[in-house]
Image (cartoon, rainbow, N blue to C red; front, side, top):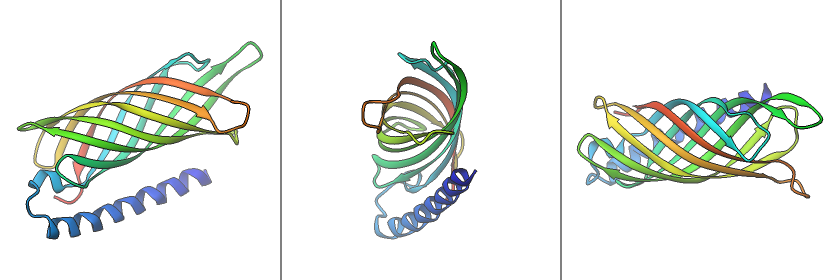
Length: 187
């Protein structure tokens, strides 16, 4: 619970920082299109297909903030939550996971839609475990503007993660399929 409260406050702090950055960027870079200056708060849900591991495939949901640096480059901190059953020959247990990622986004804009390429790193935290996994993420997203402040998106992402413990520890390789909405928080 303490980790969840800490993550919530970090997410709020990121929103505050993003709004400050957006205000200074808007004043110093008038050449950016209106929709490219906006910071988007996102919510998503989807399905994780776990490959090469003893974890069941499962659903997940998450929150993100997309912070633009230019017309084509954005940074996106995100937090995803998921549960899965871990099975091996000795035991079976349900784990709850918090997945924190920081993604670099390269955008290709069309008229009222666009494609984004996502690359980044993350940390995966499992309840009842001191082990932390470092994740590498890569994928793509297609989005459509529903209004001036609302976007609908679908995303596919590849994620591989390994333990920081010496001797290897756990590893996860997954394909993440999701859909979500983004809303401009500074229109």
